[in-house]
Image (cartoon, rainbow, N blue to C red; front, side):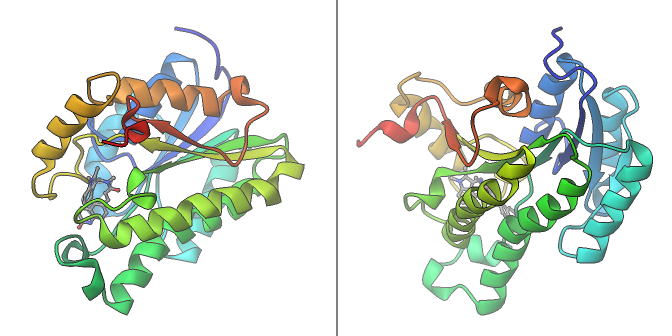
Length: 256
Ligand code: IMJ
């Protein structure tokens, strides 16, 4: 155990279970002495996230559905009472309607398009605006993205468009919040088996292809992502903001 994040209060949004990327990041942060706070979307997610919060030494657990401004505002009001200041936020939240990940992209409805943008991209703006108020001494905001924002992956569809918006959002937020000492970055993760990839048809094939093609000849795991996140959440990345880092065993550099 190290002390990279000792006495740092870090909010973890989007952990669902032990396979979640957000949990991989939480574990790495715990190992470096961080104090964590977890959020869950609603009653359906509560028990699962409570288990993680308990594993994290009885970390505080707060409800927040990012589709409601009032809930984002209430979350940070509660956080002010609970911990006072924040040093880091991990935003690991995305959602598209199931039908929009199964049909052709050209058939995406207006409603489905706006839903994916709202939950997967706008939510970072709302969270960053509120987090700023609890980061008087600066801080680090980290989100998760996927290479489907840069290149076409079958079925990623509207999520690819939302992740492209999220990545641009990272740059604009980094520009706005930089003067306050708040850095905003993203990790572009290689495919990981989580609740978010469970419904994807042929996901096993995707994992196999990545394993064969990636320069490191293996899959990205939660430890890889946790360690990269430690860089971004800690002072090790003091000079880095607005950046998108691929943590994908090198898969993205390959042409064929
Ligand atoms: C998701 C869809 C299609 C292809 C995909 C993915 N590939 C990967 C993912 C190749 C790696 C997982 N990913 C990177 C995501 O961002 C997933 C987001 C997501 C997943 C679901 C599943 C259940 C649901 N809505 C979702 N919305 C977003 O109803």
